[in-house]
Length: 487
Ligand SMILES: Nc1ncnc2c1ncn2[C@@H]1O[C@H](COP(=O)(O)OP(=O)(O)OP(=O)(O)O)[C@@H](O)[C@H]1O
Ligand SMILES: [Mg+2]
Image (cartoon, rainbow, N blue to C red; front, side, top):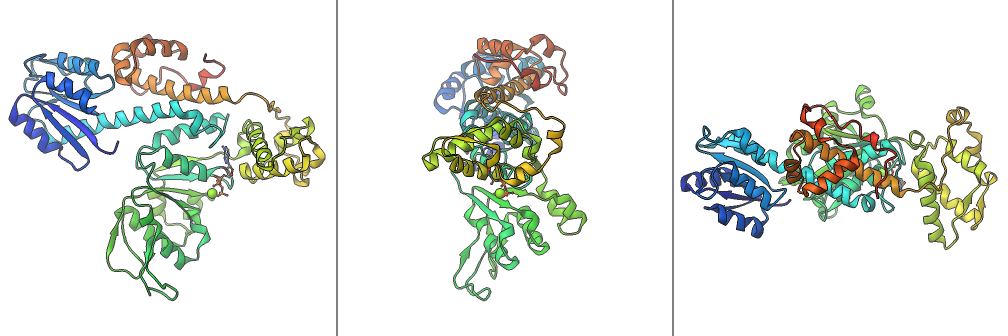
């Protein structure tokens, strides 16, 4: 949502003008109409995200105006304003589908809060809908594959945080997929289509990293022959992925903190401040908290970056992913080398399954390439495994970890993820409307019938939401879905 389209419906000129004045902002497109009839027409023409409607209008006074708007355009957010709070109650107005209810003269802070909340909710809904619809593309075969509930939690976190501008810290051992997560956050955000720039902070000597990040002016240091634009400038409007942040020196950290706070910096050797709009995603394979205790990482920067941490579990903690990834990488490598993908002998599979995979997914991928070449379309035998795999008698093997059938279908797992996300969203909406079907359907922008069907499918009981407190989850754990199937 680049520009927020807001429609204002108010017959009282002075009131309408006040709203326009209070709401004016560069990233908002405000449209003012007088009558409800014009308002309904504008819903179709402008597709606004939000409508602010006065309850005192000639055609449909009171909550009926709200109902008319949401029925005409399900999913649109509505904030009602009234000059006669005594006549129409807030409860009746919200029940009719309004997100908020404000008394005139509208208090600027309350208005901003109501608008912010309504639009935030809308973004939330769109992001989730997006996830549900594209889960197979996004998290399917091209990007991140997983059948592990732990990873599915990660996917849900990505979906939740991506559309915001929050700083994300990705924590995970080497080869767990941190780079893929960073990319997914960008692709799932409103900055998609703008630059995505990735910098490996561990790969630069201190002085050079500063110049890489912030750029430099000609002659600012020996070897700075021309002016150079840094990655902060290159990523303007988009996302900057700062990888291996734990490797940076304290000096660089001071500068980073300042840039993050102010979104403004000077090029090395430069005078003029440069302003940028950059979303920061960082990653580390070392525990930054440990580095903080050891005095190697600034505490203030740590807190600034740790706004939304995403932890990627190592492969040995999601062994159910091993067969899925194995199959995928074998097929991939086979295609690349023009060979047939090999089968894996049962005893070899047992070793692969039990190995602790210190190099995680990257290590598995590299070995798959090797096996494709070695097996030449036949079977990968235990003898073909590298010595380190067969030497390691992993704890889990000793404990008799179950070996998962590698041909188990992946598709149902992805389907399940989509369902978990959708179910979680619908539960939230149902909690909000205390199980009221029509209001929940309107809010979610789906037909009543569709909501009914989905509730049945997901085992959501309207009755259960009636008494629900906003903080509890009457829908139970999303894991209850395990084993259910979708047609
Ligand atoms: N869930 C996954 N599905 C498919 N491929 C994956 C998955 N996770 C990781 N990979 C692949 O494994 C390799 C390593 O991933 P990535 O580079 O993102 O790891 P990393 O955590 O950034 O590692 P490092 O800490 O070493 O930089 C890549 O080739 C990536 O495509
Ligand atoms: Mg990486």
